[in-house]
Image (cartoon, rainbow, N blue to C red):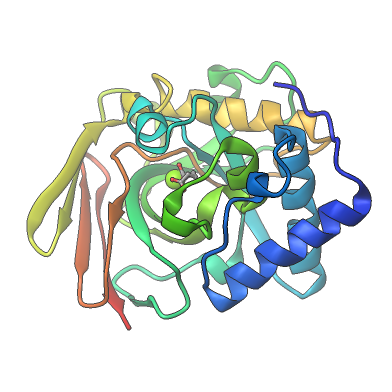
Length: 267
Ligand code: 0L1
Ligand code: MG
Protein backbone atom coordinates (compact mmCIF):
# COMPACT_ATOMS: atom_id res chain seq x y z
CA UNK A 1 0.00 0.00 0.00
CA UNK A 2 1.48 3.36 -0.96
CA UNK A 3 1.58 5.91 1.84
CA UNK A 4 2.47 8.83 -0.46
CA UNK A 5 1.17 12.17 0.78
CA UNK A 6 0.01 14.52 -1.97
CA UNK A 7 -1.90 17.09 0.13
CA UNK A 8 -0.23 20.22 1.43
CA UNK A 9 0.15 20.58 5.19
CA UNK A 10 -2.53 23.32 5.04
CA UNK A 11 -5.00 20.97 3.37
CA UNK A 12 -4.26 18.19 5.88
CA UNK A 13 -5.02 20.60 8.76
CA UNK A 14 -8.14 21.89 7.00
CA UNK A 15 -9.51 18.39 6.41
CA UNK A 16 -8.63 17.37 9.96
CA UNK A 17 -10.61 20.33 11.31
CA UNK A 18 -13.54 19.30 9.16
CA UNK A 19 -13.41 15.72 10.49
CA UNK A 20 -12.94 16.84 14.10
CA UNK A 21 -15.93 19.19 13.78
CA UNK A 22 -18.10 16.40 12.34
CA UNK A 23 -17.06 14.01 15.13
CA UNK A 24 -17.69 16.58 17.88
CA UNK A 25 -21.01 17.86 16.60
CA UNK A 26 -22.13 14.46 15.31
CA UNK A 27 -23.12 15.76 11.92
CA UNK A 28 -22.60 14.13 8.56
CA UNK A 29 -20.35 15.64 5.91
CA UNK A 30 -19.72 14.67 2.28
CA UNK A 31 -16.79 12.33 1.72
CA UNK A 32 -13.51 14.25 1.49
CA UNK A 33 -12.72 12.97 -2.01
CA UNK A 34 -15.68 14.97 -3.39
CA UNK A 35 -13.47 18.04 -2.94
CA UNK A 36 -10.09 16.30 -3.22
CA UNK A 37 -10.61 13.55 -5.83
CA UNK A 38 -6.86 12.83 -5.97
CA UNK A 39 -6.63 12.09 -2.25
CA UNK A 40 -4.50 9.01 -1.54
CA UNK A 41 -4.62 6.53 1.34
CA UNK A 42 -1.40 8.20 2.56
CA UNK A 43 -3.28 11.51 2.64
CA UNK A 44 -6.04 9.83 4.65
CA UNK A 45 -3.49 8.63 7.21
CA UNK A 46 -1.90 12.11 7.32
CA UNK A 47 -5.31 13.54 8.30
CA UNK A 48 -5.87 10.72 10.83
CA UNK A 49 -2.41 11.31 12.37
CA UNK A 50 -3.18 15.03 12.73
CA UNK A 51 -6.51 14.13 14.39
CA UNK A 52 -4.71 11.83 16.85
CA UNK A 53 -2.15 14.55 17.61
CA UNK A 54 -4.94 17.02 18.36
CA UNK A 55 -6.94 14.68 20.58
CA UNK A 56 -3.81 13.74 22.56
CA UNK A 57 -2.98 17.46 22.93
CA UNK A 58 -6.52 17.94 24.31
CA UNK A 59 -5.87 15.29 26.99
CA UNK A 60 -7.41 12.22 25.36
CA UNK A 61 -5.36 9.12 26.17
CA UNK A 62 -4.43 6.74 23.39
CA UNK A 63 -5.39 3.24 24.59
CA UNK A 64 -4.91 1.21 21.43
CA UNK A 65 -5.78 0.68 17.80
CA UNK A 66 -8.40 -0.96 15.61
CA UNK A 67 -8.20 -2.88 12.40
CA UNK A 68 -11.14 -2.10 10.15
CA UNK A 69 -12.62 -3.47 6.96
CA UNK A 70 -10.87 -6.76 7.66
CA UNK A 71 -13.62 -9.16 6.59
CA UNK A 72 -14.99 -9.94 3.16
CA UNK A 73 -18.48 -9.18 4.54
CA UNK A 74 -17.45 -5.67 5.60
CA UNK A 75 -15.44 -4.94 2.48
CA UNK A 76 -18.44 -5.97 0.38
CA UNK A 77 -20.80 -3.98 2.61
CA UNK A 78 -18.68 -0.84 2.26
CA UNK A 79 -17.39 -1.33 -1.30
CA UNK A 80 -13.66 -1.22 -0.51
CA UNK A 81 -10.96 -3.85 -0.91
CA UNK A 82 -8.12 -2.97 1.50
CA UNK A 83 -8.21 -3.08 5.32
CA UNK A 84 -7.49 0.04 7.35
CA UNK A 85 -6.48 1.04 10.85
CA UNK A 86 -7.59 3.69 13.33
CA UNK A 87 -6.68 4.76 16.84
CA UNK A 88 -8.70 4.24 20.04
CA UNK A 89 -8.77 6.62 23.00
CA UNK A 90 -10.09 6.45 26.56
CA UNK A 91 -12.99 8.74 25.56
CA UNK A 92 -14.36 6.09 23.21
CA UNK A 93 -14.49 3.28 25.81
CA UNK A 94 -17.84 2.40 27.37
CA UNK A 95 -18.53 -0.05 30.21
CA UNK A 96 -20.30 -3.36 29.69
CA UNK A 97 -24.09 -3.05 30.26
CA UNK A 98 -23.85 0.73 29.90
CA UNK A 99 -26.54 2.89 28.30
CA UNK A 100 -24.71 4.40 25.37
CA UNK A 101 -25.87 7.83 24.26
CA UNK A 102 -26.64 8.20 20.55
CA UNK A 103 -27.26 11.97 20.54
CA UNK A 104 -23.51 12.47 20.08
CA UNK A 105 -23.34 9.98 17.17
CA UNK A 106 -24.47 10.34 13.55
CA UNK A 107 -25.67 6.86 12.53
CA UNK A 108 -24.11 4.24 14.83
CA UNK A 109 -23.69 0.58 13.87
CA UNK A 110 -22.46 -2.32 15.99
CA UNK A 111 -20.12 -5.15 15.07
CA UNK A 112 -18.64 -8.08 17.03
CA UNK A 113 -14.87 -8.30 17.35
CA UNK A 114 -12.14 -10.17 19.17
CA UNK A 115 -9.99 -7.72 21.18
CA UNK A 116 -6.32 -8.39 21.95
CA UNK A 117 -4.49 -6.95 24.95
CA UNK A 118 -0.75 -6.87 24.38
CA UNK A 119 1.87 -7.75 26.99
CA UNK A 120 4.78 -6.95 24.68
CA UNK A 121 5.37 -4.15 22.22
CA UNK A 122 5.28 -5.04 18.54
CA UNK A 123 6.90 -3.33 15.59
CA UNK A 124 6.74 -4.04 11.87
CA UNK A 125 7.48 -4.50 9.08
CA UNK A 126 7.23 -8.25 8.79
CA UNK A 127 5.05 -8.76 11.87
CA UNK A 128 3.38 -12.20 11.69
CA UNK A 129 0.45 -14.02 13.29
CA UNK A 130 2.90 -15.87 15.57
CA UNK A 131 4.56 -12.58 16.65
CA UNK A 132 1.11 -11.29 17.59
CA UNK A 133 0.17 -14.42 19.53
CA UNK A 134 3.51 -14.36 21.40
CA UNK A 135 2.99 -10.71 22.36
CA UNK A 136 -0.66 -11.14 23.44
CA UNK A 137 -1.49 -11.15 27.14
CA UNK A 138 -5.13 -12.12 26.63
CA UNK A 139 -8.07 -11.82 24.26
CA UNK A 140 -11.58 -10.73 25.15
CA UNK A 141 -14.88 -10.27 23.33
CA UNK A 142 -15.80 -6.77 22.24
CA UNK A 143 -18.41 -4.78 20.36
CA UNK A 144 -17.28 -1.87 18.27
CA UNK A 145 -19.76 0.94 17.68
CA UNK A 146 -18.70 2.52 14.41
CA UNK A 147 -20.08 5.81 13.17
CA UNK A 148 -18.97 7.09 9.82
CA UNK A 149 -19.13 10.85 9.73
CA UNK A 150 -19.88 10.67 5.99
CA UNK A 151 -23.43 11.10 4.72
CA UNK A 152 -25.16 7.78 4.18
CA UNK A 153 -22.01 5.80 5.21
CA UNK A 154 -20.83 6.56 1.64
CA UNK A 155 -17.09 6.84 1.38
CA UNK A 156 -13.89 5.55 -0.16
CA UNK A 157 -10.84 4.30 1.64
CA UNK A 158 -8.96 7.63 1.74
CA UNK A 159 -11.97 9.38 3.32
CA UNK A 160 -12.70 6.65 5.86
CA UNK A 161 -9.05 6.47 6.94
CA UNK A 162 -9.10 10.26 7.52
CA UNK A 163 -12.23 9.75 9.65
CA UNK A 164 -10.21 7.37 11.86
CA UNK A 165 -11.81 4.28 10.34
CA UNK A 166 -15.27 5.35 11.58
CA UNK A 167 -14.15 4.75 15.19
CA UNK A 168 -16.66 6.01 17.72
CA UNK A 169 -17.18 3.79 20.81
CA UNK A 170 -16.19 0.33 21.96
CA UNK A 171 -17.19 -2.04 24.74
CA UNK A 172 -15.01 -4.90 25.98
CA UNK A 173 -16.44 -7.51 28.29
CA UNK A 174 -17.11 -11.18 28.80
CA UNK A 175 -14.24 -13.37 29.91
CA UNK A 176 -10.58 -12.70 29.21
CA UNK A 177 -8.79 -15.81 27.92
CA UNK A 178 -5.26 -16.71 26.86
CA UNK A 179 -5.14 -16.79 23.07
CA UNK A 180 -3.38 -20.17 23.07
CA UNK A 181 -6.30 -21.82 24.90
CA UNK A 182 -8.61 -21.09 21.96
CA UNK A 183 -8.90 -21.82 18.28
CA UNK A 184 -9.40 -18.23 17.20
CA UNK A 185 -10.36 -19.20 13.67
CA UNK A 186 -13.40 -21.25 14.56
CA UNK A 187 -14.52 -19.06 17.47
CA UNK A 188 -18.19 -18.32 16.86
CA UNK A 189 -20.29 -15.28 17.72
CA UNK A 190 -23.99 -14.50 17.56
CA UNK A 191 -25.18 -10.90 17.56
CA UNK A 192 -28.63 -10.17 18.99
CA UNK A 193 -30.58 -6.93 18.80
CA UNK A 194 -33.70 -6.67 20.93
CA UNK A 195 -33.63 -10.45 21.41
CA UNK A 196 -33.44 -11.29 17.70
CA UNK A 197 -30.41 -12.72 15.96
CA UNK A 198 -29.15 -10.13 13.47
CA UNK A 199 -25.72 -11.55 12.66
CA UNK A 200 -23.44 -14.48 13.25
CA UNK A 201 -20.04 -15.65 12.16
CA UNK A 202 -16.72 -17.22 13.01
CA UNK A 203 -13.61 -15.19 13.71
CA UNK A 204 -11.92 -16.67 10.62
CA UNK A 205 -14.04 -14.09 8.76
CA UNK A 206 -11.36 -11.60 9.82
CA UNK A 207 -8.54 -12.11 7.29
CA UNK A 208 -8.59 -15.88 7.98
CA UNK A 209 -7.44 -15.39 11.60
CA UNK A 210 -7.92 -12.31 13.82
CA UNK A 211 -4.23 -12.32 14.81
CA UNK A 212 -3.42 -11.81 11.12
CA UNK A 213 -5.46 -8.60 11.28
CA UNK A 214 -3.40 -7.43 14.26
CA UNK A 215 -0.19 -8.29 12.35
CA UNK A 216 -1.48 -6.28 9.39
CA UNK A 217 -2.23 -3.39 11.75
CA UNK A 218 1.33 -3.49 13.15
CA UNK A 219 2.73 -3.50 9.61
CA UNK A 220 0.60 -0.48 8.62
CA UNK A 221 1.76 1.26 11.82
CA UNK A 222 5.36 0.65 10.68
CA UNK A 223 4.57 2.38 7.39
CA UNK A 224 3.38 5.35 9.45
CA UNK A 225 6.58 5.29 11.52
CA UNK A 226 4.73 3.97 14.59
CA UNK A 227 4.67 0.78 16.65
CA UNK A 228 2.24 -0.94 19.02
CA UNK A 229 3.18 -0.40 22.70
CA UNK A 230 2.80 -3.07 25.39
CA UNK A 231 -0.54 -2.65 27.15
CA UNK A 232 -2.37 -1.70 23.94
CA UNK A 233 -6.00 -2.73 23.43
CA UNK A 234 -6.53 -3.82 19.83
CA UNK A 235 -9.81 -4.44 18.03
CA UNK A 236 -9.10 -6.96 15.29
CA UNK A 237 -12.07 -6.21 13.02
CA UNK A 238 -15.76 -6.94 12.64
CA UNK A 239 -16.67 -10.62 12.31
CA UNK A 240 -20.28 -9.81 11.41
CA UNK A 241 -21.64 -7.09 9.14
CA UNK A 242 -22.24 -3.84 10.99
CA UNK A 243 -25.86 -3.50 12.20
CA UNK A 244 -27.53 -0.07 12.70
CA UNK A 245 -28.76 0.79 16.21
CA UNK A 246 -31.23 3.38 17.52
CA UNK A 247 -32.18 4.71 20.95
CA UNK A 248 -34.07 1.99 22.83
CA UNK A 249 -32.17 -0.90 21.23
CA UNK A 250 -30.43 -3.46 23.39
CA UNK A 251 -27.56 -5.48 21.96
CA UNK A 252 -25.91 -8.69 23.14
CA UNK A 253 -22.92 -10.29 21.42
CA UNK A 254 -22.60 -13.93 22.54
CA UNK A 255 -19.17 -15.36 21.92
CA UNK A 256 -18.25 -19.02 22.11
CA UNK A 257 -15.74 -19.56 24.97
CA UNK A 258 -15.53 -15.83 25.79
CA UNK A 259 -18.95 -15.02 27.27
CA UNK A 260 -21.13 -12.14 26.16
CA UNK A 261 -20.98 -8.37 25.86
CA UNK A 262 -24.19 -6.35 26.38
CA UNK A 263 -25.19 -2.72 26.03
CA UNK A 264 -28.22 -0.50 25.55
CA UNK A 265 -28.61 2.55 23.38
CA UNK A 266 -30.20 5.73 24.71
CA UNK A 267 -31.12 9.16 23.24
O1 0L1 B 1 -14.30 -1.24 12.02
C1 0L1 B 1 -14.56 -1.24 10.82
O2 0L1 B 1 -14.44 -2.24 10.08
C2 0L1 B 1 -15.07 0.02 10.20
C3 0L1 B 1 -14.11 0.57 9.23
C4 0L1 B 1 -14.74 1.71 8.51
C5 0L1 B 1 -15.81 1.33 7.57
C6 0L1 B 1 -17.19 1.57 8.06
O3 0L1 B 1 -17.49 2.67 8.52
O4 0L1 B 1 -17.98 0.66 7.93
MG1 MG C 1 -14.62 -2.62 13.54
